[in-house]
Image (cartoon, rainbow, N blue to C red; front, side):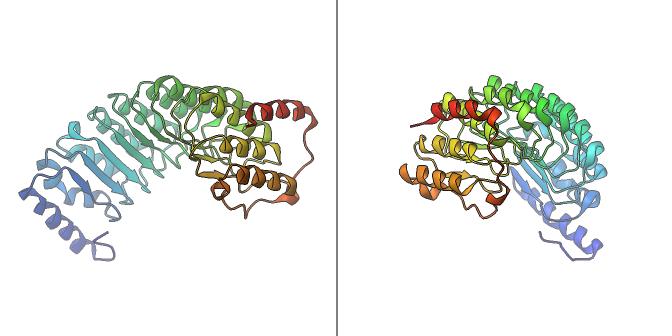
Length: 343
């Protein structure tokens, strides 16, 4: 953020001078984020991008990386094969621009950390990225938050994820996967990514119908430390199934976010019982639900009894007045799940 508010000609000249100054040294990391310069700004960095052959990390976040700007990065970056980290965020890249990003990724088989959040691509863009990332098997961290990946894009990503044995961190929040693609993605991660530690599937439209198979996949994630599966309307039964799966996995879970999932009572109790069973547990988010007053008290009692009361996040948005009567059709199933989780 060094040229904000400056006249265009002056700003671009400043960017050119600063980036050309790097030519006297061998640099491996470049971050030009928060400079809204678009294609013209990318081209102002031409000499650096073309002559620095050892760049391993590059970030263009909040830079106005349009289709044309993405094409310029692909054109000018002389040594994409050196890239290990590539971050794009809060841009207007779209599917057409993402096609250029995908082509660059095809030339970067050593990619370890890729982020393209809030970039306005859809399933077509997700397919371009899946193809590009499939060029290697070195991925450790992936963040595609806040893009309409949708079902078709989710299927494409699942095929790529299955081939990433070193993957530890996956953030697919607000990607509208839907239940079918969520099942495929979770299954691919369980089968192909044994080192996975962080998984965010919040706001992915999983719905209760997709929970059993997603839960089955989660039960095979032996190293998971953080699971965020908020804003999916899972209900008490769905969250209880997820909690049982986490217990079955034996994973060293320390953080669980099941906020805004239409919990009334027993799903919240299940989450608390799971938290109480995990050594070193640090954070349980149940906010934004409809947990009854009795349910809140039981959750607090469980957490306090386990000596982790501070791990319960504030519940300021919980609305007990919205709590419905328990669903008798699910009552027996919920009770059986809770028995599995009791200490």
